[in-house]
Image (cartoon, rainbow, N blue to C red; front, side):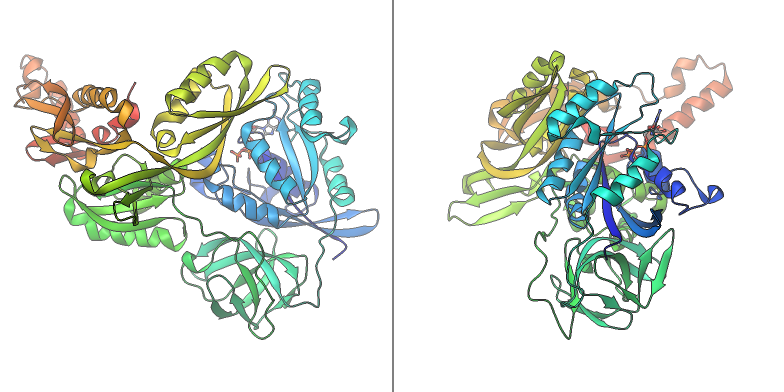
Length: 595
Ligand code: GTP
């Protein structure tokens, strides 16, 4: 145990975490040169394309230092706020963290929020100033920021480059010298913290854990405390490049267990594994059920694909326990599912996987959050779909989730960012100067406003120079009303949204204008109306057009005609017939594109 070191890497997106991890693996000969695929830790295609570590993994390196062999377990953490609970459990499995900061970018919001988690868990922090090879690096300035933030001596910061390999030996040395060996009692009842799980189509669900007390051997009967399920440990082992089976995984080490578990929902990140015969007294602290925060309707374009969509979602859920779905029907869209996601990125990933891996053509409705609706008798119902809101006369109050958000930026953009947050019904909590002209502002904001278009707006008002991070804070009563959209006097339930009463008027007007842009002209006039209850608050009309798209070709050029027809066909694919009006997918997301 004294020669084990468990550590993770904390970094903002793109600050070079994966590249640095590769170098550590290379330097410790965990992989020889030819095996080194770029960025080994991100092994899903989608992940590589997005450059974001979606699912955490672990990898063991053996490092020889001053004549002794050390086992270094690197536990990878996902780099996005949607997955912050997983990050917190990965951090809880470690005794140390490399705090990687890009020498050209400086400290960003994600760095700080993950750092706070690591400090809370008493991790030894090793600051690494990365990408010092860049011409645009500002090592002294960024070191100032790190010194201010951590209150540590400047000499403790390691200057490194994942690209050129500068600083890699120093980092490994620091891990051995500064990170404490794991504690724990090898003879105590087993207590292992699950920090991740993966799905394998042959072996079922593989759970990754760190052993806090005791040890785990092949063939033993184990129990997962939160789910209260019991299994036989068919295989246990450690994680190098592949899984390496062992008879026993010892106290302090990181390993995996295969025990015939079929679905991801049985393995909960943060749960405790113990023995059936000699169980531990209590579960490891910090377990939480992750709950989806963002919901959207997912509907097949062709109604006969409903069952296909169900089986695709079921398959996705096998390896993604945080995805939830329930059948729902919409007058406009027919039968589909209301899906729950951890956040916007998670939603996009699921959408993309449905398309790529399952070949599903789907219409996704505007995302919304979970509302707590109290009726006049005082009972509460969670509503995940604006269309499912009870009649306004029965509602006593509606509460919506608020997040506490941190934005880090240069003072140049402070004004516009404040204006943006206040315009999104934000409440300023505090403002901290980090160093020089960098400032962190903390706002409480309704999550419902964030899921609409906050990221894009923040990016544009700050010209990309602001980083953003948040966590769920509380639920607060808000004056929310349901805004309906009518097309030729027919309400389209899939376009209903909940919006704040004070903004409803302008919101309704902008929705109508946007839909007018997005819905193609058809052979008859289309009236678009926005309504709150029976009251129409805005209206636009799309004028009729002749349908013959080739008319404007003056009869001449055949290939051009064909092209136009092809184009029209393409355009059709993503259309949904509602009453007699054809609506393109984009229109269902109109609310995301309001100016
Ligand atoms: P996420 O997985 O998205 O969190 O990103 P990451 O932090 O793992 O960053 P990644 O290692 O993917 O690197 C991001 C970009 O920076 C890539 O284009 C790398 O090639 C580049 N990069 C990483 N390390 C260095 C470095 O030391 N020097 C220079 N010049 N570029 C680097």
